[in-house]
Length: 311
Ligand SMILES: [Mn+2]
Image 1 (cartoon, rainbow, N blue to C red):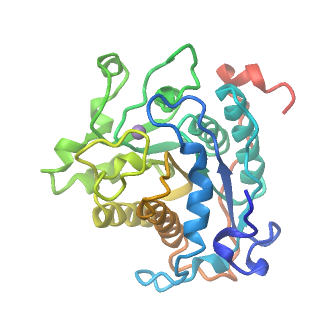
Image 2 (image 1 turned 90 degrees about the vertical axis):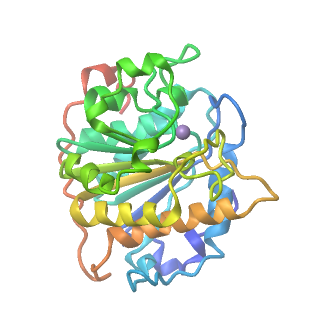
């Protein structure tokens, strides 16, 4: 990828030492089952970001002045297990440097690595999963690191809250917790869904945002567009409230599957990312010191030990 700084921001706002925010691109698409191309997501997202206004009207802020360091991409791996391992390692490194860590995929399997890292560094983690799909299979096509399994581990190890769900396999009903799931068809008629989701969130929240949660009318360029998704302003209103009422410790955005003839999805992804940063740092001056409140890493959970030897 031939990109210098995120969104073309001045280099002074993009150095690792002073940046509060880190962005890790993960151009990976090894396990997706239908339309391929999520590996092209980060480049399309970064290119759209360069053409975006950097003043956010709603918050009256220019969040890039908090400093956004664009990490080298995690690329060159074919096996999902290797990608998950690399993502986990890199994300954790930056968390331990007191950065607000964000990740842009790539397909959803990469989130297995991001969630592991956050879960090891923050107490009582809630994973807020915004997606059309439940992604709760324990294994799929012979791998536990398939995109269809992206949230299985989170369902076992964290407070997993799922929002926007409208497609799943019957086997996933045995894993899914109906008390912690907001289905799209219910959200369509429940004017209080945002409040009830936020009540279910713990203090420390990691957001994993699969772009297919959004309606295909505004986000057609994704691997599996499902009808009946969330719209732009309700999504923003919800996110802003989450950032305001909880300590969001990081987020990832996945499954942009760009098409050359359709740029509006790339641009939406760019705006969504910038909006989430703007909400995170709303009311915070660039001089203020950032404290993510991470813990010294807990011992890796037993089931993660297999790949921890060279960490
Ligand atoms: Mn999905």
